[in-house]
Image (cartoon, rainbow, N blue to C red; front, side, top):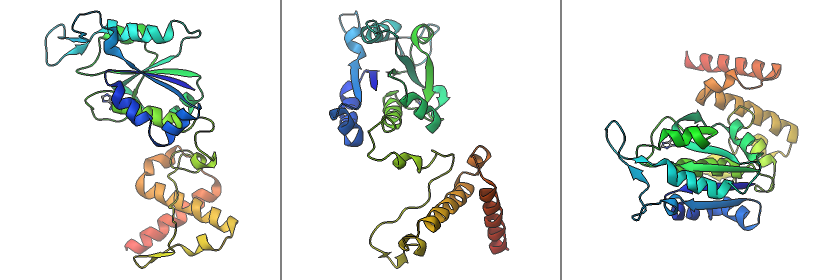
Length: 249
Ligand code: ADE
């Protein structure tokens, strides 16, 4: 998959994207990620990319033209044109489902804004989708763009060593993941749940499903409304809730 990141801070992004799993995937040729400096496309002598907002108000606004020229340098030679994403607190909240869909695309472009935002006309002209990483405001789109690329990149074929790495983890199946344990078997007087050391795969699978259901109910009950649950899951949740209520009284 190819991802182009348009930013005023390519060095910062490059450093994050050269690290760990995403960095290794790039070296292995599994991900083609390129960071571009928007400022290089400014027509002004001082390489300005921002100006005061029309109508007055605080802060500066990023001008449309440098971002447009930067995007055109990436996209113009390409057919079909890549999917254009603008990182914004006004965008649709990023979900695991959307990350998976985007990971199936051949090519995306991620635009990171700064200051008080970018000229609206640029968004109208070239952006296909706005994505937010949460209901809070960052100083720029870079951290959000990096979060998006990490979430997408790890889902691309071959990036994680084992497909089940993400099939079992939180949010993939609409539930939170079960708890994990590793050596030593006793740590600070705490033991590993007995079932995990039996080697009995069916019992381990059932235990993990039950823990996933318990955790989702305890930590993110809102997720249960949309999770695909079996009759057994629903029966277990009822039993667990009754048990909890019993222990509280
Ligand atoms: N830029 C600034 N804040 C953001 C957020 N929460 N999500 C995406 N992009 C942003």
